[in-house]
Each structure stands twice: as structure tokens, then as C-alpha cells.
Image 1 (tube, rainbow, N blue to C red):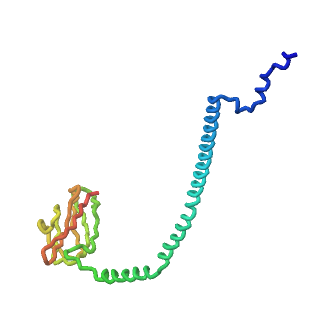
Image 2: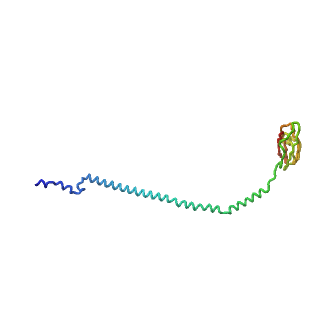
Image 3: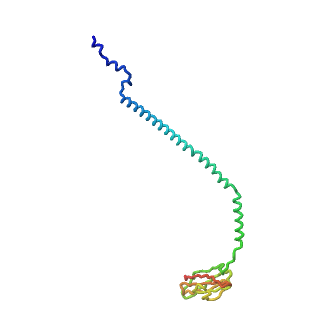
Length: 202
């Protein structure tokens, strides 16, 4: 009967789990627990950081909203600058002053043709006759006048002296296909003004 009471190994399973572990296993378990704690702390820190960043972005988006309100307050200021009418009143006052200066026009300082009229074509029946051409003119500040043929300066090459205001008739020679005629005016200071017309035969 003694062999039946011998099995003692059955008492080892009744021991607590941590009591039978070797020192190496205990060290590994400690390291594992430490790593889990560190990972948890890092995870919590990341969550807090994400919450802070998201919260910060929300603040920046909300910040620009009051800025347009400040720009709107500045917009009525130019409207107030446009409303004052006194600025227009002084602009009308200087408009009256130039009219006073424009009233006395300076007189012309050299002789000039006030009017000039006459044809620039001669209707000839043939090439051997002549046709009467009539010009008329009036002048300002002229004391002498000349009529010239084939020149641009009738005083230098005069055909004859003419009045400073006149209706003047001369004969165009139909034998010529065209010819230049000039009236030159001279004032008291000796200044000259010329009117040249080229008449063409038809």
C-alpha cells in the first residue's frame, strides 16, 4: 500500500504563479510592463498634442472673422470725404478767373490773311488764249502787298503791287499746263506773309 501515497509532485501546481518563476522570467515581465507603460504614456502624449493642434487651428480660423469687420468700419470713411461739397465750390471759382484772362486776346504781331478766295483751276477753250482769274483777299496788320507769277515771294519777284485788301483779276495763259501765283503781305516791321496757289489748266 505504500507506493500509492508516494506521488508528491502534485503539490507543485498548488503554488502561486509568481512564486515558481525564475529571476530571468521576472526580469522579462518587468521589462514588458515598463514598455507597456512607456507606450501608453507616448500614446497619451500624442493624443494631447493632436487635441492641442486641432484646437489651435480652430482658433486661427476664427481669428480672421473680426478682421473684415474692422475693414468695413474703414470703408465709410472715404464716403465721408466724398460728401463734403465745399471742395467743388473752389473749383468753380478758378473757372471764372481763366475766362477773365482769355477775354483780351493778343493782337497778331505779323501780317496775316484774314480771308482768301479764288479758283485753282482755269477752264481754257484752247491752248492759245487766256482766261481771266479773280482772287479776293483781306489782311490784318499789312501795309504793303504784291502779286507775283512763278514765285513763292511776290515782293522779291513782283508782277505788280496790289492793295492789302482787294478783289484782283489777272489773266491765266492757257499755253501753260499750270502756273504758280503768290500774294505777299508786309507789315510795318518788314515781316512777310505769303499765299501761293498753283492754277492748273483744264
